[in-house]
Image (cartoon, rainbow over the protein chains, first blue to last red):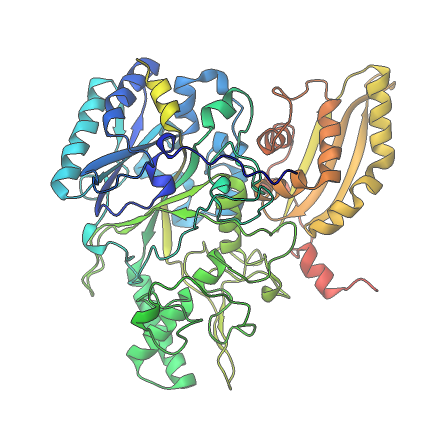
Length: 457
Length: 143
């Protein structure tokens, strides 16, 4: 293999949200069904003036802008000849048996209950609208809505609450409803100077059409490869967060913590919350701040788990240790290199006012990757069954403490063990279900050139 | 939990293809041994030659495996392993209806496997729920 660096992508051809995390505090994510190619093309054409690329905007931050995801059926509306040329999981959708073998959406998360009763395969496009202000967002949402109506494109309203749209709850920005600081760590998206680089946070693992990735983002060749070049997949997942169940869990189990390590009930609840995630609610990682949250470490990303071999600081099944194992040794071959995701999510719905927990709230999850199966689904399978590293031996069947679907035993073990120094571990026999999947769609964020091409003149 | 893959590939009837099928069958275990050993997720794998109804010649090749976990995320392991990729590419090359477009990347490989797989994750009966790694941990292979 030559050591000549491959040319990097042109940011002007890549949709903005892929290469940069937006800081616009207002967003709305609108779902659409296309009736046919002419209308769909007219719809996309009307949105092009607001379509944001990854080009540096310098001091001219757009007040409003949007990005566009197309599902497989959405792509076929424009290019029916591409049928069968995309990865299987993208063609079949996240509700398919193949994808559900990883995602494990059961019970109230069952795909038959998704999307407020709308047909899952009728989602053709998702328009991600962003604004610096509420007015800026509303004005662009109105433009998108009018463009849809003018072109015979129908909008889905995926929520039963509010106006039915997926709108970011701006006051909670960078936090989730369980109270944790969010959005701290994302892949660096470097461009490999050496084509033999296997760093899973390099951008060639997320953009389609570049060699050297162990995850082989595709399609790489043919007409579909040309269509997908400089694109990135978007696992769009709406996750209801059951704050009542979460708060109740902390209340119920804090006495065990008090009995084991002392302190007050409130301190024990915070300690337990930190052990579930691997970070205190302010963001401080347990590895760096094992005893208490520390403002100095609340955004820390430079740490590893290899020194915490007995999980005395951070439980093995803590959410952040499973979803991003860092330097944790994973099984070679099948589970190495560790996949990464670009997380572009935001909260929706107002927080509860305990003891009143009524209301719809959760996470609008945009999990970007170059390979839905090799990155997104693989990480989700690890979340549902911790089988990727010897640290979970011998049973290799525990679950992510926060976001796993509680698949019944013997497929997984819903217990949670918290080792403590100089004492017996605290063992919680069965973790509750904290998350309910409201819907999932697999989209492609096509390149700017592809979107212009399908929009037509 | 284990999942099934039953890859059923009708093959061409010309003498060269028929000979290649017999060769693939004869060499199957040796050609996949190292790669599958390294996966630690495959319980069993075997290749069967399905005879023509008339009794002469081979109608199809059938690759039957039982493996741990979901299939799609782990196909990249098989694609990235040279020896295993060669086995699967060999099957695609002698197929009566070869993949179109030809398999040149992971996407094509994934589609070839899924398009010719006769089973779904819910199809399998299990006597035991343990994975290969759990079993190997409980019964270490003698040095």
